[in-house]
Length: 376
Ligand SMILES: *Cc1c(COP(=O)(O)O)cnc(C)c1O
Image (cartoon, rainbow, N blue to C red; front, side, top):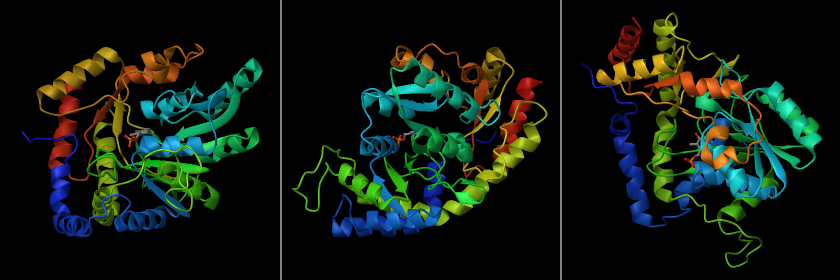
């Protein structure tokens, strides 16, 4: 029985061992541990990778989101539209800044924010008149891009700041363009389990605006000005470590190959499982970073049965997300009660299978065989 890790960071480490060691040793030699030369090199490499004008490396994906909203002065009385079916960080940041997350339902096939429901939610907030519509956070969920042409058009029409929560999906592309410049700002996470992961927390912001990039640099270092002890505004301590940048630079050299490998596994899962379960619908004309490959089972009890059967055969699975955010204790009281039936239904039926660049053909075959057997 093959041992199938949900993620295999050890195998990946072995592939990049020599380059990784060389880069880590360089940091240990110069001892500029925070915002050292590796960070500047990484920012340039990441911007080139996704075709963005500016990249500002920060301490996490969550901090990237927070800096982007702080730079717009978002706070009390502001409505921030975002999907209900996402990781908590997307909604946490507006709430921490005193703004109100307004939850929007998602597309049942691609799991991405539903532009038609977004329009209805914006109209509802305008009509109620208590909150000022200020920003829209589109999330590229599980590796696939959100519907950026639709989101951009709505944001432009409504005068909303458009933020791309690309925490899970760096490396993905839409209509031939890598994610990184589809919105006013794009936030990426380098948490170890993301497609491009560090060996600790890390993140980055991308923007086409030089003014925003300068503001992000100031905000990540306590709101500093042209010199270190000139304080222009209240900011954060959200800098990236040189060691993390060194890890990311080593991983970036193999990243395209890893994306290709993830795509191959996704296609294999599609072909083996497509007749037995609902496989993830593809966003048209896009490339996914395949952070997560999730199938849909008919109902909660079938999912529980399949998950237990897989566990019994040493196939790890995960549920992203067992509860839509508007049902979480942290957000319940901030939600206006609007039903979000697609998000609620997905939370009951969704199940993520192992997908990572070091998953072998035998392991992928074994995963599929066990899923099919559980459903037989
Ligand atoms: C992981 C994640 C974040 C937060 O990134 P961190 O680096 O863990 O702070 C934000 N949004 C989404 C959708 C995520 O998956």
